[in-house]
Every structure is written in structure tokens, then in C-alpha cells.
Image (cartoon, rainbow, N blue to C red; front, side, top):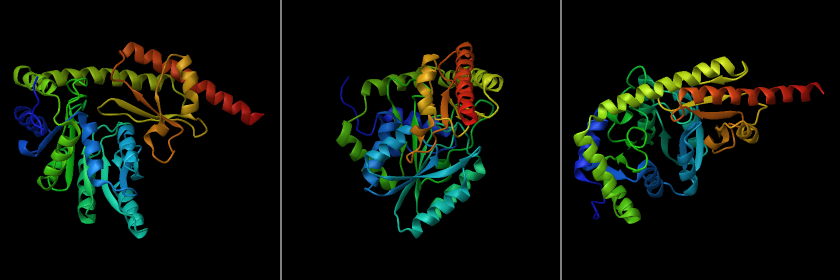
Length: 343
């Protein structure tokens, strides 16, 4: 119950290296900074590196918590096109070229390569290599956020990008999705040249992460079959993912499309462009279902006809009920719009 190290408990940092080794990362515990969730790590990186007006490149769509943090530090967020396989390397090249021509300063690329939040897509190994090459040649460092990497359903995800480049990638991890969210323990694996800056910044904001939470997780890793526990979570989420996709196939209108995630928590649904999912939310709540409107995942106001659905918490039965109810709300709105066109 005392204060601890500002960088994090030494034993836990060793155990974190064992976790990262599952995704191909060979790390030194001295380069690990334990944080209050990976969200704090995002805040530290933004505070240290972003000056007002700096460009941060992100996926389109991107994690709402990251967008909020970047906005807090007055970054100019530029979205880069994604497809069913994640960030498109050629779109990244073009975005960088355009921004350089405009004389704008690009600070870093932020991305979630594994089962992305909100889209659920998985970035293939060849694209990871190409994106690393692009950013290395353009002298743009990468912030790789990876809370879902161990939650692949059918096969392991490709090696982390940090495994291929230890100097140009800051890697963020978290126990919130694999062990327990309430303890708020995450980490950053930082290139040696940047480590001291992040440690000092963390100490200045929180002194040290919760010693109780760190010791609890460390004891769990030492005494319990944590790999088996993660495997059981994966099986649980896979059944729920299947229930959601089957329900979408059965009930949603044919004019809608959605991603088919191979892991993680989320499905990204795209409706006809005339449907505003934020405006539709009150009707969904009346039907006792909820989602996150797509605009939350864009810094530029796009995504109004999209929504993020999550299957991580409800039972398969509740997922089927919820998707069926939501499909009814969407279908009614489409019919209402069509009748207005006829009139």
C-alpha cells in the first residue's frame, strides 16, 4: 500500500515482456513504462510530442479516446483511408505527400493494427511492413496501440509492428481487454531515446501507477494459468461474434454492410448515406438497444451513416434480441425516408 516506482513495479515489467513476446516482441523491462491504462500513455505521448497545429495521422475511422486526447493538445487530425484489411499504404503515401506539399508538420501515425476499434479489421503482415517502411523513410514515428492483439479467434494475429522496428515504434498495451479493466493498468514500450522523457512526464502527472493494482496483476501472472484464461475469453467472444454476425445476416436490411472481425470486440456497420445514426439513436434507445454513432470516430464530422456495435458483454441470446430490435429501427427509418422521397 506504499508508493512505488514511477516507471512501474520491476516484476510486473518483466511479466509484461513475457506477454509481448507472444506477439514477437523482444523487449527489455527497462524500456517498459507502466501506465494508468494505455489511455494515460496516449496522453503522455501527446503532451510530449504535439505542438498546436501538428498533424497526427490516424485511421478512418479511429478510436474515439485517442481523437479526444489529440484534440485536447490541439493537434490537427488527418484520417487515412481504410478498407477491409485496415490502413491502405498507398493512401498513407498520398496523405503524407499532400501534407508535405502544404508545408504541414506531421508528428506521428497512430493506429490499431489488430481487430481495430471501431472497425474490427486486422492489418495483414505485408501491409505492416509497407507502412513501417513508409514511415521510416518519411521520418514519422508510429504509435501502435494493441489492446486486442491476443484476442484473435481463428489464428494468431501477425507479429506486432514493434517486433519489426524497435526504434521508430512506440507500442501501447493494456490488461483492460485481456485480464481486468478496473485496475487500469497499461504500458508503453518506448525506444530508449524517448524512455526518460516519458518516465519523467508520467511521474510529474501521477507520481506512480497504483502499487496495489500492479501487485495484484503481478501475483495473478505468477500464480494463475493466465494464458488459459485468455484462451477462455477468446472462445467466449468468438461465440458472441458469431451470434452478432448471424443476426446481422438474418435481420439487417440488404442495403447495409458490415465488417466481419476475426477477433476483438467490434463490428462496424454502414447504412445507406441518408441515415444519420446519431439522429436515429433516440429511436434505438426506445427499442432498448444502443450503439456508438459513427461520427464519434472521426475528427472531421464524417461517419454519420455508420455505427459501432459491440459483442463483448451481452450473451448470444441478448445479442440476437438486440440486433433484431435494431434492425427493425433501421428498417423503419429507411421506409420513412423512402416515403418522403415518393411524396
